Length: 251
Image: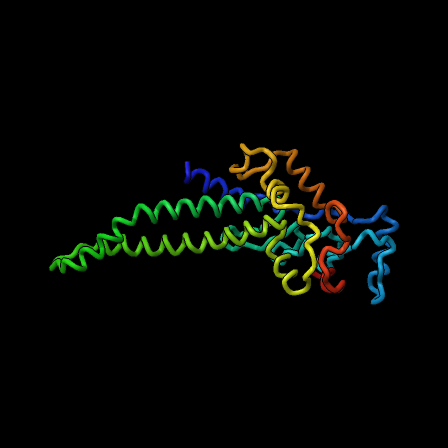
């Protein structure tokens, strides 16, 4: 079962589109306002007409993009709530496959942990044979010792990665946003709605589906709807980050 869930999570992460910006999307009331704001965007003194909307424009895609969206240079598109591009799954991690990615990490950690525990006896046997000074030592304990060290190191690396992502989930923050905030802002994070709500936003409200690397159609619609909103949730400040406008519009 462990292997099945690991493989399911892995291939879901690989095959699932992370979430793209719909063609023609913009945060304005109509197309006329969007065209007007785009024309004014090139001016250094640009300020949006509607102060409650903080528009972001991707110069590479030549399109408006929602908050928390970043350009993925590997696919050449803007990804909703982009976290990072993962070479191990050959896909960008974003809004719609982040849960599967986290479960892949969790199941991989459990697998390596169980393997490490199973190899403890071989690890001990290796040192016993060293003390006995057998004239014809077996190669098996040495192989088991090496496998134990590799598995233990892999498990420690993955658990560190998991802890980092758990901390980010608790604050409703992506890897990109964590580094951006560290460099450019010290204020409160506007998308943080509390650890419980942040967790449910990623894993869903159904406890029975928390360990399943997939969303229902209704959950996908809700995720996309919330991500395409032009403002942070609740009454948070309209500024996504306390960043220079030129920086935010180009990321």
